Amino acid sequence: MERILSFLYLREYSEDGHIIQYQPISALATSGHESDSSISENKPENTEPENQAAFNNVEVFIAADKYGILPLKTLASKKFSRWATANCVSPVFHKVVERVMTSVPSHETTLREVVADVISKHIFDLIEVPEIVHIFDSFGCLGSLVIKRLVSNELVKRPNENDIFQGLVQKINSSRRCRHCAKDFNVRLISGEYLDENFRCASCNTRN
Image (tube, rainbow, N blue to C red; front, side, top):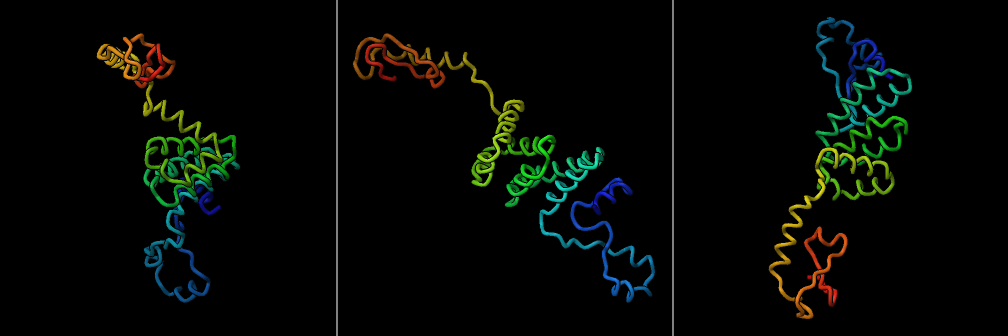
């Protein structure tokens, strides 16, 4: 709620810590003789756990969605995206992803798309994290988004069949007899195997 009020008044909110320094009443009483200028110079302390900013941004986003504060949703998603991009190798990244998948309403996909985009760009590193794989097992929709991002960002491309067939033809032309039955080649292509530049002997079905 503090961050929502901060945004409504200041159009900004602190991802971690507080906008102003919180002090108990007793502390305020003892410091009453100090000038206003000296108090305002005190920098707010951050007493929240490391990487709490990510969780705070998720909670702000959820609250902004609930109350229909669209500019705050946009700001929270930008802050979350910045954190996720910079901290995708953080030990708590998988916990943040799980929070997004379990807490954000299903009709709202903005943060999930941010997560999918970050994971797709670091897929080779993150696929080695067991917790991330477990999240894919639990939330197939996230896996689908990651696949979509891999393709749309051209991180995964359709094989160039011209290059494949060129290599396959060269391989066939360099082979005169089957390595198994020694008969002259009568080549047989099996659906899908040509992508690996493999072909079979039509006589004994041996892969060459």
